[in-house]
Image (tube, rainbow, N blue to C red; front, side, top):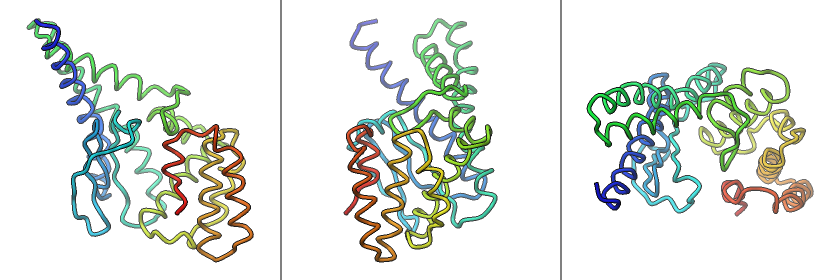
Length: 240
């Protein structure tokens, strides 16, 4: 097999493996009554708007090219955290199942394509599902976030706070409805990137209620740590 052909096949298999992983997240969300929100693989993206209209686009943030699959609840309720816990594991489980199916087939047939379609998702799934303290470009791996969510204490509070704040942003887009208590765990975090999210949502809340003094305070706090925060988080927390 020529090197160029092998490279192209490898890229294609990685793309397919990524699609299956992210679809695992999406499918679990849809099964539990959430709506499709976003799917990104490489530079290709699909997203829905508030009217559930689907559109294709090119994702410019390279850190997102590794794959993102999101569903979102239609409304805020107490069951959403439990559903989200399942959604976190949906991607790794889909990857592992794919790997377990294709890897033996690749070994038996000697097919490079089948071997790649088995080894890639299996490795991807195992790394993502293990509760390792690994960080992605934004926060933690799927298994890492699941572990934090079920560990209890400050880490659980941080994960629930992040989920509820993003949930509010997606379901209502009204920052004045944010419960300030949900921001407190982020401000107390030992993780600078999580602090940044806390400052951002506090800023958005005080902007929504027209408190200029506190808006300025949290903008200053964001600027103090901005140089230590990944660029994708800064873009995600864009202040118009």
